[in-house]
Picture: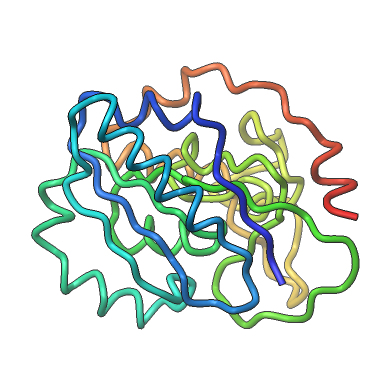
Length: 212
């Protein structure tokens, strides 16, 4: 079970203003609480107040499934090409999958909130730390909390070398440096300017306490 909530409007409005925006909404997983009514109301308010319509609002399911999402994205390939910005309303896993498949910068429209207790196992390629403050808009869809062994938010540590982390995986091989992956992704899409932005201080209480 995961719980998602709409990101604060002050974070989303600057993304939408003056751009050709495509939105993706994931309704598929019954194990995820998704604020669909709040999201649709927000999109309606944006359209009414600004006079700009979302160029495409795609409602789909199971964005966390890599192969399924690849096939679905192919159905709307022309829409994705035309969009200047893409906002994904899903848990953090869905945002990561879409970012990887598109090779473009995507923006999370939701925060995933931590739930206390055991939530089961997943065989997915990506993980979501349920941190309550999704930063994937700063890192182009690569989660620093799960891709970095130390969950660093402000760049790599001194232990990274040749693209590898000093921390070994359970199999004994060195892990890829999460922040080098982030840098290379931003460089490939021409968005290294994002690294110059000042990221707000994280509220760690959201990660530690979550929903009781």
